[in-house]
Length: 284
Image (cartoon, helix red, strand yellow):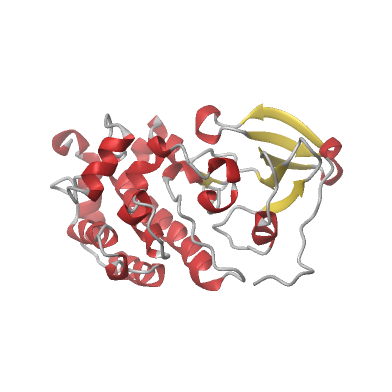
């Protein structure tokens, strides 16, 4: 896995100047801060303890994955220091007025950025990472509007979130994750389909339902999010493939990227997609 010598930068707690909490609720214990000696704006996620995940994060490097700088390992002030994404989370963006301006080009760009980041984690990174908690709150916008995936394998390494606030996460979870069955990388494919649905509808998945109701519908009733009638066929088809119950039948991210590629070559799609996005009042 990792060479025993692999290690991460250890940052002194005194070398961090804390500003405000980022984005309130959606990021919990994440703060905007300045890494004084490097004169760099960063985000610091406070933790209860540091596990070997800092080593895993330290070997990841991709344009669509949040950059990890190091960790503070002085008790009790444990934390990981990462790139600061000034645009906030995709979740917050989608519920803002700004998202009214989204068009097909924006959705295709972002869909591909998330898929590239996930493909890297599954197939190209030095350590294979199954995220297990991909959702719009764990995707952030850098200053240049490039999307970055953050909060890796929450279930795997932030020990205090092993029992994730399940209520908030159920709408994005694959059935096998809800049932605590062994998972493969395609549990992330399922979640990706939900994020795609969020970008297209700018709605909250399973809004108004309790987490356990969602779990019951997805697992027992095999229910999935409603795809609005006017949604372009190719998007609807991609989401349905992502949500297949049998994990082995869902596409891997390499396949998703080639699907997106062929969609972007479809000359009819922008027109269909933009009329769908702008007629939200009709299908809603």
